[in-house]
Length: 95
Image 1 (cartoon, helix red, strand yellow):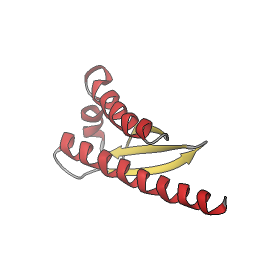
Image 2 (image 1 turned 60 degrees about the vertical axis):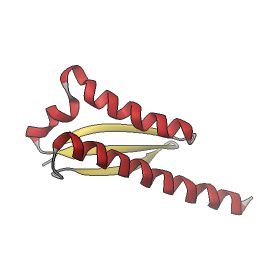
Image 3 (image 1 turned 180 degrees about the horizontal axis):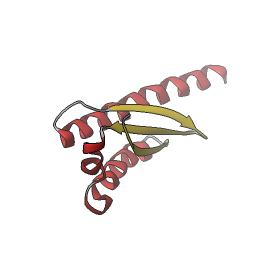
Image 4 (image 1 turned 45 degrees about the vertical axis):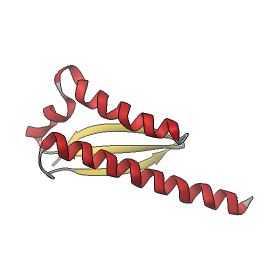
C-alpha cells in the first residue's frame, strides 16, 4: 500500500512537470519571448498554475473575450483528464 502511494506521488510529480512544460511552450509561443514565470501550487488534489507576465502582455495571454486563456486551460485540462488529475490556470500581472 505504501509503495503504491509513493508510486502515485512520483507519477503525479512527473505529470505536473509535463503539464508545466506544455504550459511554458504555449505561453512562450504566444508571447514570442520568455518574459514570464509559471508557479504551481497544490489545492485539494488539484495542481494550480499561475502565469505571471508583465502588464503589457496580460492581454495577449487572456486574448479577445478570454479565448486564448480558455484554450490554454482546455489544452491542459485534456492532458489532466487523460491522467485523471485536476488542473487550473490563472494569469497575474508580474510586479
